[in-house]
Length: 133
Image 1: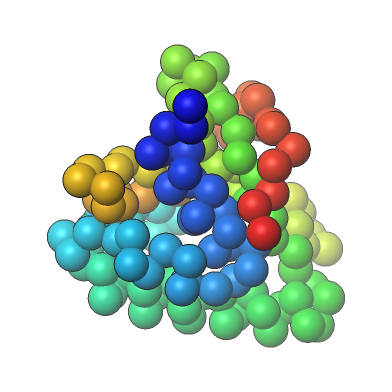
Image 2 (image 1 turned 180 degrees about the vertical axis):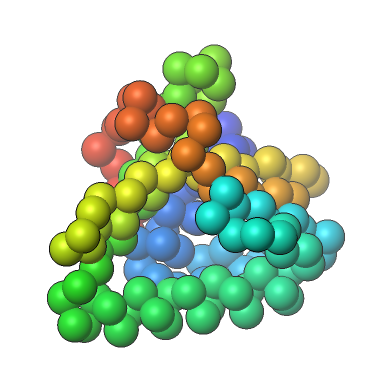
């Protein structure tokens, strides 16, 4: 039995792996909140987040065309979260490899919240090898 959280994470990973917001657009709650340890302030609201993510995906697409960046989203579980499912987002550039843990909160079958963070440490997550396309 696949949990709603895992199904939702697969859609989100699919968005990242295809750099396409359409996979999750209808799954976001209207009062959605996005927080990242790399972004100063939370992004509140579905429309605001879609705009942010669309812009981010366009920047990644350009970098990908120039062969200066690769981004992948892999389904994982995290031991410090009682093996709850998450996404390990990996960004590879010529300068470095950056990994982040992506956590979701699902409420009433909608994504209520996404947190992108380096704590819990993504390097200790148990990777599944699943990169939803």
